Length: 198
Ligand code: FES
Image 1 (tube, rainbow, N blue to C red):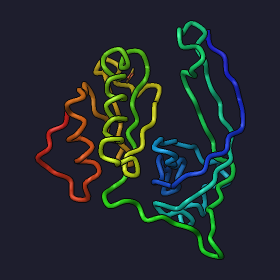
Image 2 (cartoon, rainbow, N blue to C red):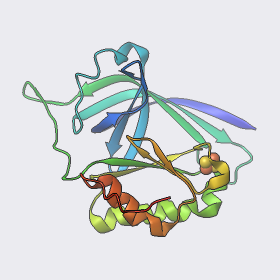
Image 3 (tube, rainbow, N blue to C red):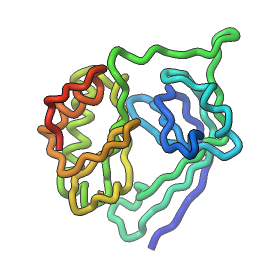
């Protein structure tokens, strides 16, 4: 049994990249706020023209609608099992007449989506999440790495799984020892081709 709640949200953060595309038009975008990443669906009426408006590092304020699904049988019923957010207004934050953009930190930005569904979580997903938070803190690299919990990546028999954006590469059977190389590979401007990550 599950139930759903709907509410409005407002987020302010840095635009990272567009997510899913359809015929060259973005359907979603990635926003970074305080070290966390959010993938937000873009309302249809906003999709055309948005590409020219946002650059990586653009500071934006987004208003939208959020649907949270809760599983009554879950011990963690207070935590939604699924969250969908749709941006209905996107406002680049301006300074004077200029759109305020921030240069991304040296290195590429990566969003790491960690599967938090039971199959993956129990097989080490929690340790993966905790280790990524440590790496963010150790390296002071939260400007380059953003984390996002996701419900399922459709590789349930190969958990724990995570996905790196914007490339959308899925990595399965992860171990915490793989994470430093993975983070280095994804955030270094010239990827280290020798780093072996499953
Ligand atoms: S449970 Fe993690 S990929 Fe499905």
